[in-house]
Length: 328
Ligand SMILES: Nc1nc2c(c(=O)[nH]1)N[C@H]1C(S)=C(S)[C@@H](COP(=O)(O)O)O[C@H]1N2
Ligand SMILES: [Mo]
Image (tube, rainbow, N blue to C red; front, side, top):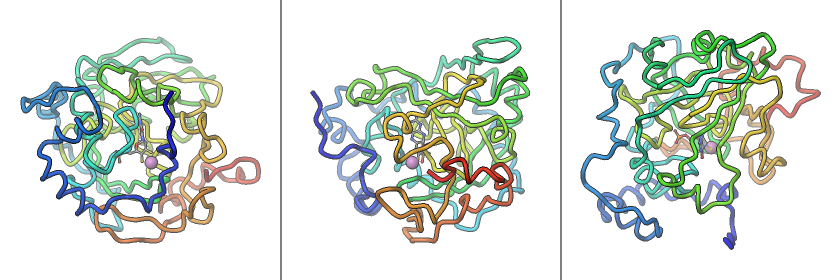
């Protein structure tokens, strides 16, 4: 039986290794083979391109997509070298800080990849990811990202509005929520064997949230198809909510009448709720949310209500604060 002194989600933000330390560790250890061995992950190290290599992505010709200038930043874009090596993606392990997650995720095959569209829709179906992506019009948006662990980054995502996907999926009028599910494949995601989580990773939003202009499906980052650790080939980006709502590597999107229960809500409902809107004044039960560490600059900055996107999203929650826990 696996006994853990600290559960991964209980790691205080202050335990994070400074970037400079892990960057130099990476160089010392080469391409991560040593780290994999040290972690006891039984995957062969290989220098050859893997099926997870984004340079081999069949939609590569769609990049770079035109930037939508409506989405601007109040801070510098986080360098790709930093955001691409600081990834919460528990299917691939819990130690985002030493390149383990990025290295293991790279071995995940990106194709074939299908997305099941089901629940309350006109026609339930399973569609190849390339058919979905090519049916959409890709654009680039600069978004802030605020993790519940009090770190943040700013990245140029490429993708399409959730609203465009909703039009494509044709939900029925009874649909109230959109439920999204990550793959289950322990052969490529070793932590799906080792950790006691209720896989698959699930998250959900209301239809109204999905129709908001900010709700975005991500296929790429930094002007290219997204490397696997960011949640290729399809992940969500909800910049006004804590990062755990932005589910990665989606294989199923269901339109449902009942509120979905996300993975973190299921395992730790006292700390992680359905709404998870960013609010500096509502502390996590074990730490403050008043400020955040920018992983790009290393600076600590004050956290903003709705992560600074209140103008676009506050109306979604008008009057609900008396009845719902909107900020956890
Ligand atoms: N399937 C899946 N999606 C996930 C996670 C995860 O562990 N598994 N982690 C979430 C959390 S806590 C954060 S902060 C973001 C991290 O996204 P990033 O690696 O692009 O920074 O992904 C979210 N989506
Ligand atoms: Mo997070």
